[in-house]
Amino acid sequence: MAQNKTDLFQPQLKNTGSHHTLVLFGLLLIMASMGLHNLYSATAASGAFYGQVKNLCLGGVFFIFFGWVLPLRLIHTYAYALLVAVSVALVIVLVMGRIAGGAQRWLHIGPVGGQPSELAKMAVAFAVAKFFTHSRTRDHYTLKEIFPIFLTIIFIFILIFKQPDFGTAGVALGIGFCQLAFVRIKIGVRMACSILFSVLLLACSGWFVLLRPYQKLRILNFLDPSLDPMGSGYNSIQSLIAIGSGGVWGKGFQLGTQTQLQFLPARQTDFIFSVFAEEQGFWGCLLICVLFTIFAYIALEISRGCRDGFHALLAIGMGSLMYVEFAINVAMVIGIFPVVGVPLPFFSHGGSALLTACSAMGILVALDRDNVRALNRHKNQ
Image (cartoon, rainbow, N blue to C red; front, side):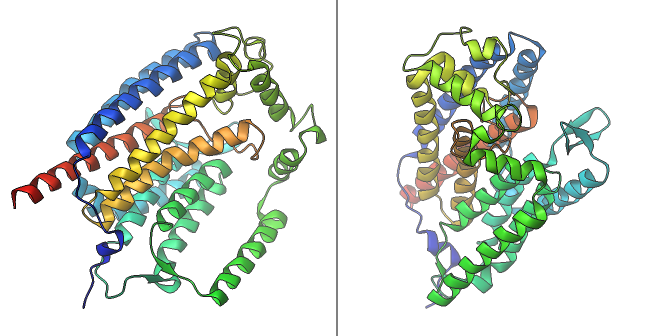
C-alpha cells in the first residue's frame, strides 16, 4: 500500500496550540527584557544599547509578520528560491562584501546592510523541510535519496566558512542535521563505517587544508587555555574568571568587575553570557537555560501536532536555530567548546541575529496557529 511521505512524522492532532502561542510571546518578552537589561550593563548604556532597542522594535515587526501575516504556504513555495538567492548573496559577499573584524561577512545595498549568513540559517531550515514533502512508497529513506539535501547543507556550510565564519557555518550545519535526525534513514553497518571513516578523513583534511592558523590556535586553546594566556587564550580565561567570580547569587547589576573594568572581551556580543553570569550568578544562568529549554520543548510539541512533514520539520528547524546557537554560545564561554563567535539569541548585540531569532519565533507561532485550525477542522468533521 502506498504511503505518503508525511506519514513518516505521524502528526498528532491535540488541543495544545492556543497555549503555545501565549507562551512563545511570553518567552519573547522575558528574554528580550533580560537581554536589554544585561546589555545595558555590558555597554554602560552606550550607542550599542540604544541600537539594540531599535533592532528589537524591528524584530517585533518581524515576529508579527511571520506569525500572523505571512502564509506558511509561501514559505513552502519559495523555499528553494530563497536558498538560491541566499547562495548568490553569499558568493557576492566573498567577492565584494564589507570586511570588519577580519571577516568578510557584510553586504550593503544602499542604506540597507546585513549578514546573508544569518538568512542562510533560515534558508537551510526551509529547504530541508520542503525536501521531505514528496510522496513515496516506503517508510524510510536511504542515504542515496537524501544525498541532494545533504550536499546542499554542506555547500552552504562551505560558503559561510569561507568568509570566514566557522560559528555561523556550524549553526547552519547543526540546524540541517537536527532536522535530518527526525527523519527515518536506513543505514547499514557497512555504510555507518564508511560514514565514520569519511568524517575522520574530512576532519584531518580540514585541519591541514581548510582551517586558518588562528582557527587552529582557537581549538588548541580550547584544549589548553594556558597555551597562550595573553593572546588567543585570553578571551577564554577572562570569560571563565567572570563566570566563576559570579558565584551562586552574582555580584549584582553593573557590579561585575571583569565587565565594568573591561577585562572581559567582546562583552556585548560573543561573551554576553559571561556578563550575565558574573552579575546574576548561578541561579541567573540556570534561569536562561530553563527558558531556552522550554522554548525547545514547545518547538517539539508544535512539531508533533503538525499536519505534515514540511510543517513538522519546519518547526524543528526553527527550534534548532535558537537552541543550537544557545548551546554553542554557552559551551563556548564556559570553556567546553572552541571560541567560534556564535551570538546568544536575544542577548548578544547585533541586528541580523536578533531579526532572525524574532522571525524564527514568529514562524513557530504561525505553525502553532495552523495546528489549532487543523484541530478545529478535525473536530467539525
